Length: 231
Ligand code: NDP
Image (cartoon, rainbow, N blue to C red; front, side):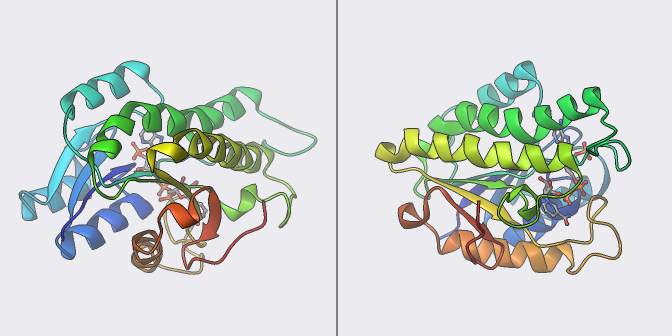
């Protein structure tokens, strides 16, 4: 049975790879991006007419999220996937030198936005059969793994873990599962060319793991292959 997914940051990197994998297998993707009309996403949408609904969405903007939510009013979403993310400056997020404005921006995208998007599209998720909200976090947000360096990015992913676990608690009795994932170290603009895996590999693993998840996995933090990560 084909499902409807909504993916933020669907125009490049892991979000685009997820969109490609999903439409290839016959699912429908609401592909949300700041500019969904240009680049590879637009080409894919032109090839797969009907498989992709491009949706303009800046996840940091209340107005943009409200407009996108109005455009989708009443439409069921089986899986809502918060994927959009930023890393912040590579050189100024250390214990001794921090770009505080950039840190705030990282929190806007990586922490506040997933909750804003989850709140706005919860009625769509409740109208769907899948009833899943997944967020791409990072192993770098695991305090139990390797809490060294890259403070802006790491703290944002630790914070989104807590935020979405608390959200998951609040929507448990509505039968909506809330899932957190590390996508692997992936060759994207963020992960860099030397990363371990291709976006398609990460996307295929994430999709399989999300397919196999439900209320039994709600509020979990796992890898793209389903292994539990320490908080
Ligand atoms: P990319 O840098 O390749 O892509 C980031 C995506 O986020 C782009 O689509 C970008 O859109 C979007 N985005 C950023 N800001 C906004 C915004 N305000 N509104 C809407 N979209 C926005 O990153 P990846 O694909 O590598 O990362 C995807 C997710 O995976 C992120 O959450 C990241 O933290 C996480 N992750 C990635 C890892 C990796 O190795 N690559 C490892 C661990 C986690 P635009 O083109 O408009 O800028």
